[in-house]
Length: 267
Image (cartoon, rainbow, N blue to C red; front, side, top):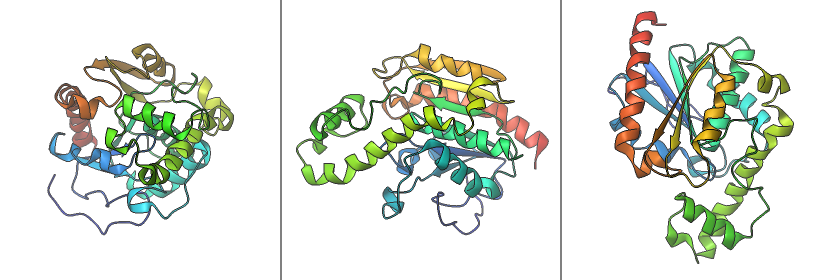
C-alpha cells in the first residue's frame, strides 16, 4: 500500500498506520516472536489493507524494554497505546499467543467504549477458556524447550547447540509462556469476558498439520463471537510461513469483504 504515513510512533508500532488506507490490519505475533514475522504480509494482502505489526516490548527493536508476563496488564497497556490508531475501520490478526493478546486487547478497548474491529482473525491458538496449548514456562529445561520450538517450526535448527543465542531467546519465550498461562487468573482481565459473546466477528484459522493446536480447540473460539467462521488450511503451527498461498487466499477473501464495508462506512 503506497501513500503517506505520519511520523512513526514510539512504543508498540514499528511504524504509524497510513492515513490513506481504507482498512488497517493490526497484527500480533506468536510467543518468542516479534513483529518481523509479518514482514512479508504487505506484499501478500490486498491493496488498500495497511498491515500494521504490533511489537511487544523486550524483543527486536524493543529488546531493551521490560517484558510483560501478565495477559490482562499487557492488554490494558496495548489498548491504551493503540487507541489513537483505532479511530478508523480496522481488523486484528493474532497468531498463536498473538490471538490471545489480540482478543484481550480488543476486549479491553471495547470495554472502554472504543470502536470494535470489523473482524478479529485468530490463528493457531486454542480458545481462551481452554488449557493453554503451550507448556508452562518452567516445565522444560533450555535444551528441551529449544527442541520443542524447533519441532513446531518456530525456531531454526541452527539455534540448537548455540548456548549464546539460546540465552538471549529463551527468557523471552518463557515470559511469553507466562502470558499465555496468566489469563486464567487475570480473566483477560475481566472474568466475565469468558462468559459472554462480544459484538464481534471472529474468523479463525487452523493448520491441518498443527502438532500443537487441533482445529477443534480453534473452533472453540465460537463462544466469544457474534459471528464465527473456521478455516482449516494446509501447514503446521506456522502455516502463514509454511504454506502461505492457501492461507493468504483465504485471508484475502475475508479482507475483500471488510474493505468493501470499510469504504462504505469510511471514518
